[in-house]
Image (cartoon, rainbow, N blue to C red; front, top):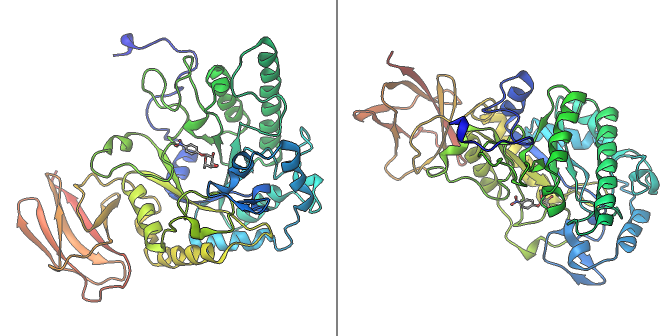
Length: 441
Ligand code: JFZ
């Protein structure tokens, strides 16, 4: 009950899911790509002949590189193979509906020519506005652009992880003004941006300034009607993050599922709000790392399973790419994009615009749903040749067909339980059986 709730000035702005067209588009997109590209691509996990196993975009921290030495990398920023149109073509062929781009990661280097810092693409040999070219190229092929923005900025002298003195406090307020300016600049220069995904907001300094996170959300929403913002930006009056002190989601969608997913049986509470997960292809490398043999690398089917898993629980999935310093993508990433794209061409009907079906999870795979169509996405076909389906009370299955139109047998085995037979032409990859369903009433 509301009267038992804590009074908050900077808590959730809204209860429940946003239902406006922009949010619906965000949700229906379902599949996105993440691009982590910055100076860290140049050393690619290696500093002074030593290879670091940690995330490549954190190399400055692992190798304890002084800020000025790190920013010297700007002199080598000259991605001769970069072609925004090729990137857009690759994303389009992969079937992603949106791309999240690191406008600025923790290192502070900006992919756009920001007038508020000298650490930008404008002051590199390459000079050109990478972000601007990408926004134009993705938009031209109908792909939404989302901006990743790290509030944490290692290049800025006024950034603080905690506020201990009066001087820290003054410096940090200056830093927040700088950040506001950069955000306003992004919103003004690239008004087609659909989403801001904030990162680097976990420090005590931000948690003590929850007001500022609420202010940023409002500022961007005033400038860009419909813009969506992740929960990772937000902290409330008490420094509580993602969910406020009353347990209400802040921002428009939850964004803490990172390289992991909610359990498909135990964590069904996530279906109550919008959420977006993101994943790396190796274990934990977002930026380009030269050596992918240092950790497990997921195979294309594993990547696909995570995409379907997210959609089956009402979430979006963003697959990460860390482009090379020359502006091209590594062959392993091209292979994954190609695999996903080919699969999506045949099966995207079970992804775009789909949601949690509300049916009991079975071992053969995942359900997704779009109105009266329930999609069975089969990852583990059983030896019995029969896929068990348990329907909620009052729902009956009328037909079952593969997406290529092959009818499969549906046999009621007991009340609200069916056997759906495997298709005769069993594909050598995960496949979809589409059920037409009817409510009793
Ligand atoms: C952050 C970054 O530090 C990282 O480099 C990358 O950009 C990633 C997408 O985001 O890392 C995080 C942030 C949050 C969590 C884990 C890693 N988290 O909420 O568990």
